[in-house]
Length: 91
Image 1 (cartoon, rainbow, N blue to C red):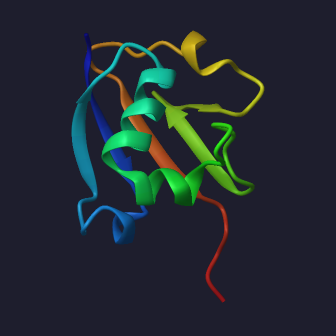
Image 2 (spheres, rainbow, N blue to C red):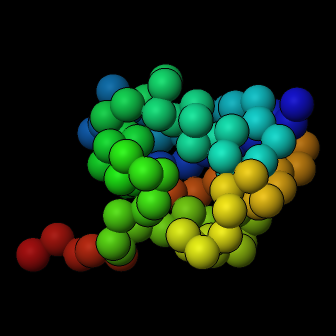
């Protein structure tokens, strides 16, 4: 398994935690871990079908990924960083 760093601007859903590490080798495992370990965060960013909600982006190592890529095909390396962000600005 690969130890990666995850950062999220959605710390409201993770008890204030803004970053943490995870053992995953692909984005599907990452999404599975979020669904089980951080259900509020998962619910905020993804639909039940594992599709990202509108205006939410998953960026891994400076590459943005969308729903068109199968999550299991998005690799993570030992030094990967996964960033979860929202493009919606507060008003």
